[in-house]
Image (cartoon, rainbow, N blue to C red; front, side, top):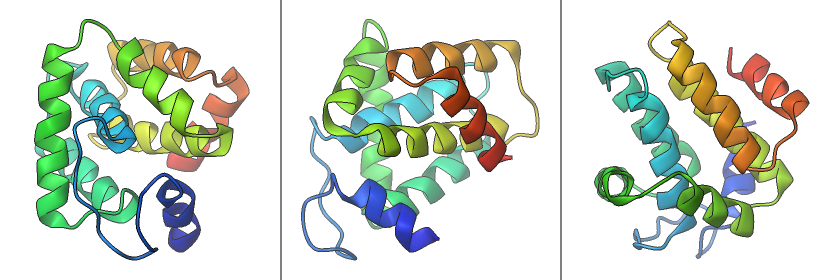
Length: 149
C-alpha cells in the first residue's frame, strides 16, 4: 500500500522511483507541504507530534531524504509566512495533481490534523476550506478523513 501511495504522489516527482530529488522553490511538493504546515499551525500550536507526522509524510510520500524533508519543511514554512492566502498553494496543487492525488493529499492533511489527538474547530474549518480550493467534493473529504482515522 505504501508503494502505491508513493507512486501516486511520486508521479509529480522528477526522477526514477525510489530516488530522492532536490527541493525546488516552485515545487508542487513545497506547496502541498505548506498546506500541511498551515493545518498543523491552525490551532495555534505546531506540536512536536504534528512536526514528526509532517516529516514522516515528506519522507514516505514526497520522494526526499531526511535532509530534503527538512529543507522542504523550512521552505514550506517560509512560503506559508510570505503567502497572502492559501490560493497560491492550492492553485499549484490543482494544476499539478490529478483528483486521485488530491484525495491522497487530503488524507495526508487529515493525518496531520488528527496527529495530536484533537480536532480543533479552526482545523475543521480550514480542512473544509482547503478541500473546496483543491476542488474536492465533500464526499471525498469525508472518505479521506475515514482513511486517516
